Length: 452
Image (tube, rainbow, N blue to C red; front, side, top):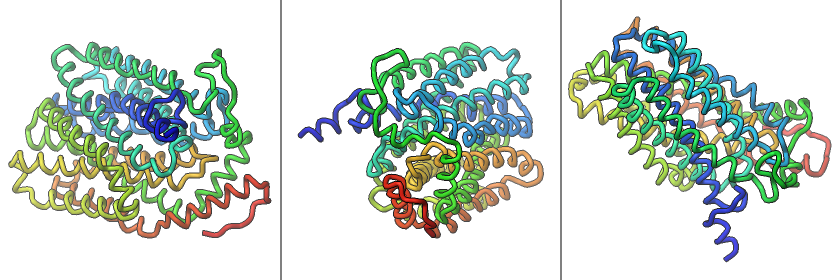
């Protein structure tokens, strides 16, 4: 009965309550989703609606995606330094959330934003930096406190709520921009991001820790045992786990699928608005409705499918379906005038996008070694975001040289290639090797050569 009550009731720390974990990480992902809905979708659609060229829109998206590749630089800092009495990652979550609030509010005050792409890119870059910063800390904390048997379900909730937050901010933000102006729209949305700061301040990672530096509390022994205190140990530990075959394959596959995400995110608003003559309101309303559906499905069943059928099987199925639907859409351009057909394609794509993201995140977490969790998981995500930035920037070149039919067929090559690559990942063997690393660390045995 005690375990049941701890699991299904709120606790003030994350390690003692699954409900606290699900709520906290979902809220933090909503905080990421709200600015992303504006940056990645509302602003590009708004620019496309005002006849800005695809190269300018692609340049904006390419720049604001760059900080997500910087995550690899800040992650080792989080593994090395912290206020340990407040937890290993929670102090960084609070700092990242504060920066996200202030930078998001700032973009609303860019002068003449419609004709000031440099200003939008500069502040958008800052928002992405703090969004990525908060994301690194949140993911590192998630790997630390979420048990392996909860990772897929937790990722389903995290990604689902993020997408719901992105979708709602897109439709609400588009309405506010069109009716109240850019500055007022951003100011109102910033309030919701600010309110979420309550979550990382209230919930500690483990029992007995401080909420704030001036509060009462002490260092938790589990946190102390996992904390590395030298750069050499962090780099050595990271090298030992990332050089394993499954980890190297996952890194390469993450870049490939990131390119597809970047290409599709950039292509859809430009394609629907400039090729199909939709308005930015048409796109934002459809996108929001579809993503709310996809996000809810991700929360309800996305994680359970991965738990039930296994990560490798679901990765393979999702990637095969994405390859099929994207390439088919590109080859049947005669149906593009049918709004129901286009909406159906976008709906299926984003459902698969959410489900694939859940499977990818859960897979990355399983490949992580807790000792360097923030740095290792961030490496995977940073590589994916490098691919995403490259894909966004590449879309402008593709649009200038190819018809949309060829563009969609080219995009479909990314999930096909990743689907082939993941067949060589062995999660069980990788986990066995990482467990040996943990045993060696705990028993102070000199490191041995363990081959993958």
